[in-house]
Amino acid sequence: MSSSAKVGLYDTHCHLEGYWDEALFAQLLSDARAVGFLDAVTCPHDATRFGEHVDFCRKFDLSFALGVHPFEWSEAQTHLSSLETFLHTYSDEAVAIGEIGLDFSEMRRLEFWPDSDPETMRVAQTELFETQLEIARDLDLPVSVHAFASMNEVERSIKKFKGLRGVIHAFNGSVEQAIQFARIGFKVGFGGTLTYPGSKKIRRVFSELPDSAWVLETDAPWIPSFERRAASVGLAPETIQSVPADIDFTVKAAAQLRRTSCEDVIETAYRNTREIFPKLRAV
View 1 (tube, rainbow, N blue to C red):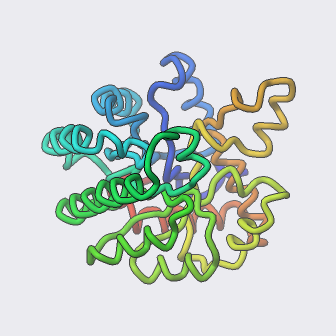
View 2: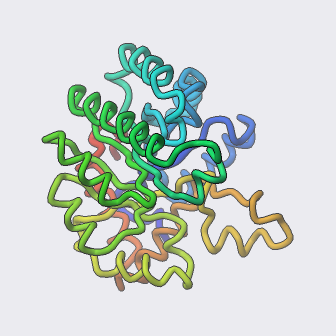
């Protein structure tokens, strides 16, 4: 159904290097092409693997972003130095700065950095985020933003840098917040969560947004769709991965929620994505 659209499918946020062996990934990519997949904003596995990330994306003809995730805040200066080195070489080739942002979840702090001071973490993440926003502005590159338990703080940081554009990925805020982000040049991304009937808030928000406000993603290998979980009965939940072709499940959920055709969803998503990420491969 999706592959009959006049344009291609973009995945505006995913992580692909380092999760599958290359032979398996080649098949996964072929499966994605079969449902109309065109290109992706492929974010690095982590800041220590920028080289592997770039090589992988080049090998499979995928676009790539470069950025330091907020989870890497404790070694921010080392990672920022590496980012600047890679951008010196690849700024013309990179399609975005990402994944960057803020994650102020207390649950995650206690899980990953139990000995950290909450305020120290917040300050370090904010400095890391704003440094990369400045880099993006100076290079005229869009950003792919992580905003978890930090939506207002993310907006406040973005507003410090005029002329930015980007996507708030895995958006879980309100309609009003999405519209506010639209006013400052950002769209909001929806992925596998949209496919779950129980995701009532996110599905309602998506259905109420203007056509111009949203884009689609998988966040592969994270956030598997309802369909992917249903097809993986018997597997431990933490082992179930989303794959590039799963963007098709998100398209179908989006069409149902917006009461339109898959073709219309794909064309709207294509237009919105190219507005933010013009360096992605075009049809």
